[in-house]
Length: 458
Image (tube, rainbow, N blue to C red):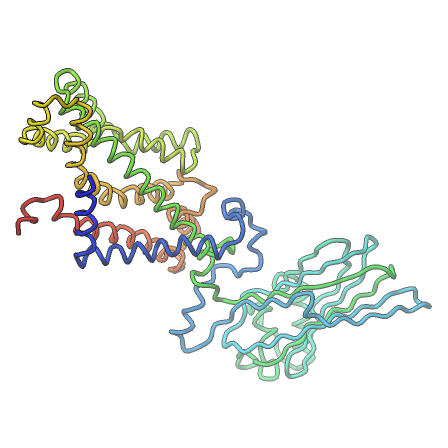
């Protein structure tokens, strides 16, 4: 057995295809290691939690595309509570506490942001009057909105508020500009309103100002400003603002674990059953071969789809079902035919003649000779099981809680990624699935010389 393992390792590392396959797998395994270091939270519980990803832009391509563009697309800018300068004073005669929060934003991008959200954190049950203002680098002050804010967290979506649009229109009328009817507030806020005929991004230092009148002297107000960009991270985001890089790096260990575990279990079980069938012969051989014939004609995928629809299984239950449906297969017949050839070898006949037990001969003389074939079968089976998980996820039958490559592609099709040209959402996980298949195919090609004696003779 040690010799067989040594031949397999030598065959892989002495061939260019084997080295290339191992290198690709090392990169994918590196992603798995990155998943443990880069992501400090429980992805399975947070992946479908929409509120967890609210600081990311929606449907943003990867940041590295800026390298290939003539213009610089904006990245998300988050101005936290500590970045606001706070002024406050109390007027005894009015019985009011006045608080002013002001933050600066250095905007140097060539495109407009996608969204703007202001978060207000209020500790006051009685409510307070809050006024929001936007001041451009050219000094133009734009009133955004005025509202009563109660206790808790209040998100203000600047682009969706009617009073923000009215404030922009009134400012433009005062400047003698005919207000356009279809331009988003995010565009107008970052445009040079002194040159209304050509709406271009105005670069410079912007100021965001909040004025609050509070009847409660002990009340507090803080804020966070989120200016969403149009690019994000290494793999972009999806329609739920989720960081696809996190989904991709977590999908790598899940895909490899699913593919390798299923391939190893099914290959070893089928090889063992094929060996038992050949070695014991007679009734055992007949029963095993007839069961194998039945298994090979069963509609594997429809049965799997039916079980997935009825029971809503997770990925590890899916793995167990796949193994159970693959106990007998083509490898069983192949192993049986190879075992029959090995049984006619002189050293097996010698072992029988000196009284070696059936179990000893099978475990020490036959199965080790089948090891190279089994390893090659494992290597070549992994991509098919990775594709199987992706196909089931694409049909909506995968594990809904786990960010697998197949689930990401399924979400992309549901979100209209192909129709709207959101290439990163489909292309990145699809490329990783294809690269995984290529890696194992290259390693399988390197093992041909071990499995095929004619190639070994050459």
